[in-house]
Image (cartoon, rainbow, N blue to C red; front, side, top):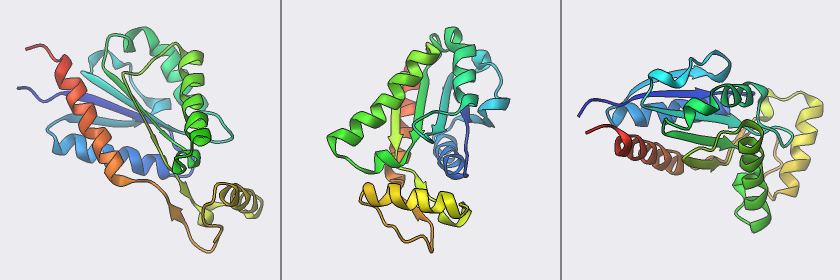
Length: 183
């Protein structure tokens, strides 16, 4: 069986979504895929790939303009290519029904805005990067963390991502893409 040729296009604001994308790429390559990793604002058209993975953080309840533009521009092509989306968001750290609904609402808003409905969706908890925040953002994020029941210790960064969940998503992507490759 030929190695699937995959595109992983992501956008990152503080670097954590990039780390998640890199982990996914590692697992995809370990699974035998050829992978192109690029930011969404520089991503090529998906036409030459066997599958596409897109990833984006949520900030202020929104996906990035760059990923939204990519999905809107290529929605018609992505209908015919196995497509997976991962979303990185502090809301996904909590498993209460309200938080799950909120995180799901971000995905629903993205699909409605872009006309692109991924075949596979994952919502990963993000990180509190206090070391990268200015004073005002650190105070704002501390308040958000307190509301969500997370650590409010701003003397260090807190990664809330479940890396086993990320690895499982990468395996699911490989299964999805391989199931659609011509025999």
